[in-house]
Length: 144
Image 1 (cartoon, rainbow, N blue to C red):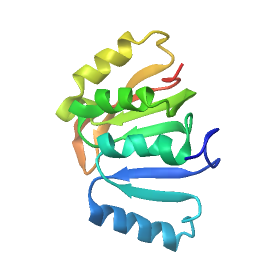
Image 2: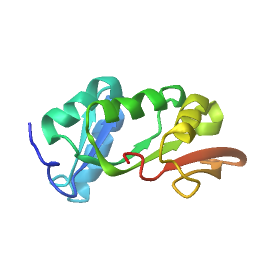
Image 3: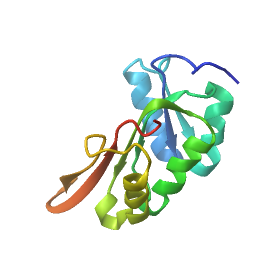
Image 4: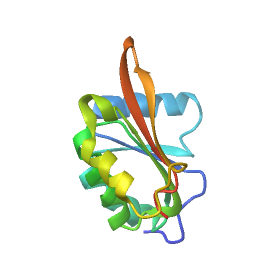
């Protein structure tokens, strides 16, 4: 494993669906971005520990979660527990209204250091459903 934060500017995507991972890898190849990005297949519970093993502590500055809202809080704390996040880490979660992530929203609101300027829910139209509202949580400075 590495130490000191891994390669600067490197992107790692955690994808549970192997077909989606292969399509993403193909698109990365077409865009000549393979040296800068990779896709790991597996559930976050299994792949988050690999982040610190392969990239070192303090290697994650941004996480976008778009899987199951009922697990966002677990994966957020799993990232912190494995010391993968940097102090100025930003955490973004999609679909926090539907199907919902009430525990994640509550825990983020209760986190020490959270201020109205660092945490917010953005009301957006759901992709491909112009008349359906959903929320996106933006938690800037989540590692502070």
